[in-house]
Length: 473
Image 1 (cartoon, rainbow, N blue to C red):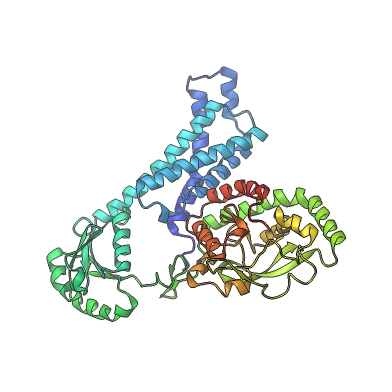
Image 2: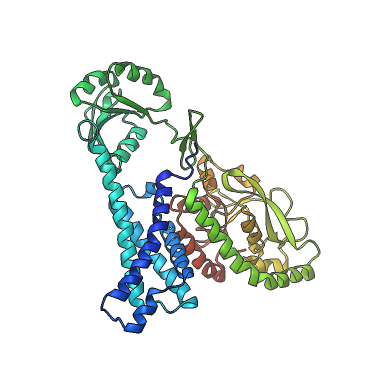
């Protein structure tokens, strides 16, 4: 069974879909019942609200919550993290809803709007708190009140496992310490937990500490010790869990799933999946439509100028590397003399620190109109069609040419864990004048900090970066 859409994320999303209209209905009733600012005829009219307003409320709140990361449990390990994301999502939703209702339905009073915000926010926070309490109670029912855990391996992987168990309040685990064969680590404290002894002492420590579970977090080279762990606990009712050492191999994040009873770990699964991916796709389609439809006459004028300026096709299709390394044809307005942009690798000129730069201000192949289009990034407009086809997103790392990707170091390939975009974090922080390795660092910032709110922030800042023209040539 695939776990691309996490069960907890789906539960939160469905519960919100049910509670948001309940909160809206409750706010309407409160506005008509409470004495603050209520008038007789007005009170009766407020009880009846068109159905499309309910739909706007649901859409705005689910988008706001998704943008704040409220549907990503991995971002909300602590209760205050989750509460803040819900509050921030409610604020975003309220701003979006206020703008839409101002354009289409102004009969909703400000007091009724405030009731809706606070009632719905209280409902969403309350049921999330109840879910956390249920998880804690589930942990209390285990032997000893909470599951007492020893981590096998005090290396980097073991540290990450212990930190995760300590921080995740929903799971009901109580880490007691580590076992590791490295003599230099004996007696050390890691995350406030002691290294209790070597792995061979597992049986004795299991008796002393009344262990409920053992989590094996050994590097790949030491996995033969797993047999010793299983043998030491063979006659004890202690659960054993293995955390594979995939962190050095996975691009950004790994996912586990079960196929026909066989455990499978995906090392190159897309980073954005489930509800967040659906929200990002809808966002792309809506914003691309709002840009492309009114911009068609402008793009037609650009195409005419290109034909008048030089011979050759108006559009170019260049092979680019997309999400997870997939090759696709990216569209651009032609900005060079015919045939030059289709050629293989251009001439490279190293910078003072030895890094290669593949775009130059004085490139003689660029046409007159092409230089203007590049100056304001107008040559990228046809990529809105790539966005419609799902080959690109509005926001993400720029899709690079295959020959350039072939020169990447392994760490740079992490940028392909998300959809490649028309604009991105590095485009608003320097653009083409940054060396390739610095572009990738900016792209990885986006990968590790992705949210719909970050996408909005980048889109709002893109026109400013374009008008400045810094690094565009």
